[in-house]
Image (spheres, rainbow, N blue to C red):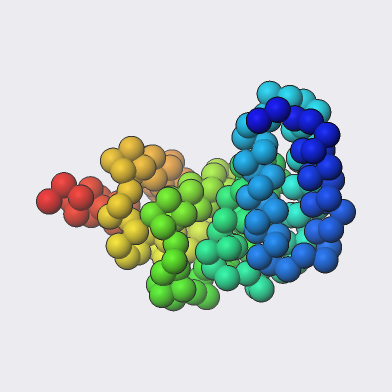
Length: 192
């Protein structure tokens, strides 16, 4: 995808209209910006314009986290984390973790293994920037993301990546041993 006038217009329109968007439109816009960013990342002008739009989406989406359906909230968060990085979306990460604590496993029924995997890695990256409040809420959120049939569909590489990040972020905390055990169970469930 080459950056051109149509992409510039598209990203500019997202930034201008984000204040009037509902949660679903914010999610779709963040995802679209993330896709354009992925293919235009080597173009500094494109990266700058997309980051500007992403900051506007972040501002408005963060205020509306409670209005997102859980899967949409995760997709919105993952898309913006890809563009802006974990440091700039740290406030959103905290809100996502808090919101996930209010969910029950059935709330994530529409989430694919890939959705859960990407959200898990993003939340773990948020913990790596060491915001104490985020580190406090993420473990319970991860329990929900790693619960259910979705985790059994993770690839061996995916399970290893999650296990490494869990150990790096929380390895020293005894009350999170069950999360590490869950990732071990994932491997056993897939290999049997």
